[in-house]
Image 1 (cartoon, helix red, strand yellow):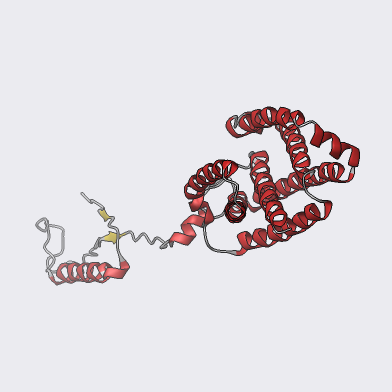
Image 2: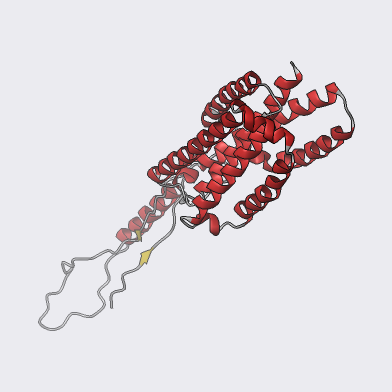
Length: 304
């Protein structure tokens, strides 16, 4: 009876296991070849006596070698499946976010221009402060819906309708704030915000630093800034207002870099958005730019 035996062992070439197995197989072959052949039966009457010519068959050990490629951490991150594993999906997502953001900024700029250049409207807003107070509850309601209702932000056209309504309310609020500044101050703030936004966006796209890890730290700083802003309402000091505006500018500059990286995604970013969350991504960047504009406008107004 013949039994074919196949031994399967994993071999690590870096530790020299293959050389040990090769020597082991060679030693077994030498031992088998050195043993004399013994006949398992006696010769019959019709058989020729002597040393018969026997064709011996030797069955050596068979080894299966499995070679696996070493994967570096960078390669494992790049080859990992995720929502943005396809570059076309990521590129389409980024283009859609920037298109939505451009429309939001154009609408906001048009409404602010109407408030600062239409003298009758400017006088009416200053004389009727209830208009500003009426916009605030509606603004925060839409903001909470967009921030908390994730499923609704992925449904078309509900997400576009909510975003359009939010952009309109934000633009009206900025218009009511801009009436207390001169037209040239608003224009200077707009130009400065545009330059800062462009520079920070390019920096966020090129840098290897992962600013998404600062999400929790920046969130704490927002609460500290809110408490500081509530305090300076009752403490009338030029330097306190100047420090408050400078801190707000720095904080939302960092937020802008973080949200741009959050939108772009990638292997070195700690958090990634879903491709269906383009409205949420556009909303984050839009709020960063608007808050940056408000604090820069305050800095320019304090410097007059």
